[in-house]
Length: 210
Image 1: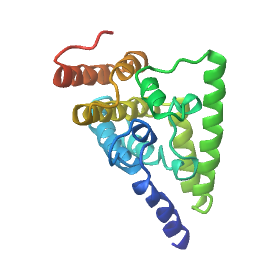
Image 2 (image 1 turned 90 degrees about the horizontal axis):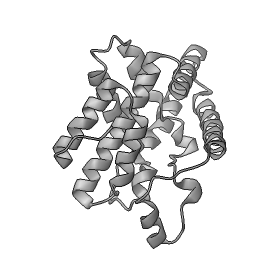
Image 3 (image 1 turned 30 degrees about the horizontal axis):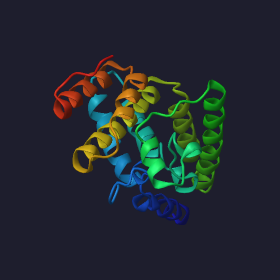
Image 4 (image 1 turned 135 degrees about the vertical axis):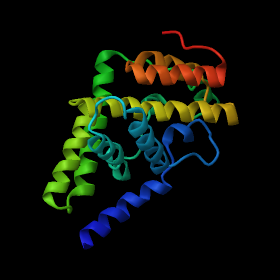
């Protein structure tokens, strides 16, 4: 029980860790990582309910997918090119960063290694079977080995996208161009695309161009 309390205490830090993407966009009182996990879990369950998925596996994946960020921290695609000057940073936020395939692989591998080490650290004192399950679910989420892992990747992105649109409506930031470019590039699940279309109609009164 002592080790479980220690684990829950560590995970609890996510409630006070703001999502970095909103911090660099100067959002006031941005959502925490735990806030994101909560709604992403609900969205995965509800949107995935008619897709013949193992909902228990899907929800477990949702709940653990970001716990590594207790030690690895939250990251964004902008981090390696983010200027210190606030004005230049705001200009950069108006574009979606493009990297060569070689650079994308380097950044992805670096992030994966850092997060895997962080997950190993936070789960090291858990019962072996529980630790193994969390590691396998996270690996599946990262690599998309099962339909549950692949669908949750979409649900995770959907939650992020919805939050970006909501913040823009409230604060006029983050700039929306990069987010819609990102949506057209990364969403391929039919349920996700339908959801994006509805967001477009609700917030922009138009349908996304695919």
